[in-house]
Amino acid sequence: MSRSFPFNRGPGAYIGPGVWIGDNVKLQNYELVYEPAVLEDGVFVGPAAVRTNDHFPRSVDPQGKLKRGDDWRALTVIVSRGRH
Image 1 (cartoon, helix red, strand yellow):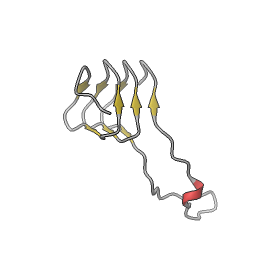
Image 2 (tube, rainbow, N blue to C red):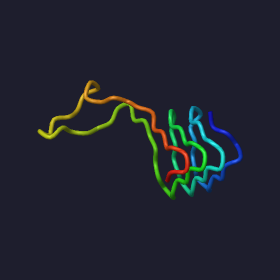
Image 3 (tube, rainbow, N blue to C red):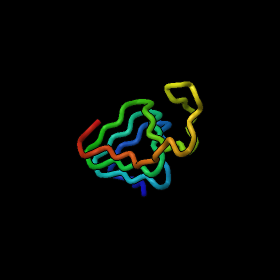
């Protein structure tokens, strides 16, 4: 769950309802963080960065064939303490 403080959120930043944000986190302008991301204490995220969980990514394999759902494994994005 996102918190309203003590972190700094720049203008235009979006934080999804299932995101967990630690203390002293700084999100710059137009940062997009979608659930189930976790930003631990002291994390800095630069301008216009995106952390996403796309359930239907459009990508191809090395042979140029469209990937299927079985080709992907959705994981939580975790940015560890004090990282950027």
